[in-house]
Amino acid sequence: MVFGGLNTQQILERANFHMDNARKTKDPKLALVLCEDADSALSYVRRSAKWVRKYSHDESLRTRIAATCFKLSTLQGDLKLRDKAQDSYRTAEKWGYVGDRRLHAC
Image 1 (cartoon, rainbow, N blue to C red):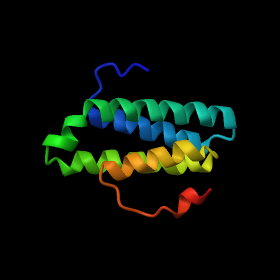
Image 2: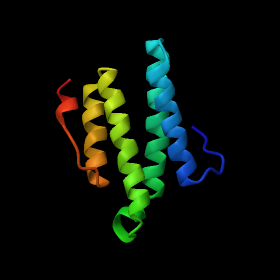
Image 3: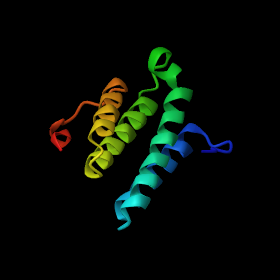
Image 4: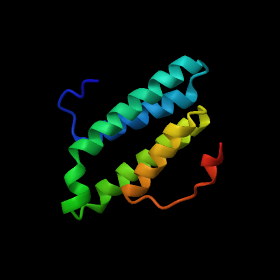
């Protein structure tokens, strides 16, 4: 996936855009592809912003990454991708998300 000079916030928005469209589509195959695209964008953001978790006090970015990881985990859970959903939820926790695990009893 090419991110063509987009900044971190724009890539997070792109991931959210893909997740929103995955939720809206009636085509399960398209939903999976959009979910994978969102996961790819989010992975890119996490790798490029890894220093934030260790060295920065930019809580806003950490919070946005954590929230997007959580949103991805709920979508993956809805698509019956249990292992991926749990991985995304754990990643959200690593980035500072504190929330409800009950949705991962899928």
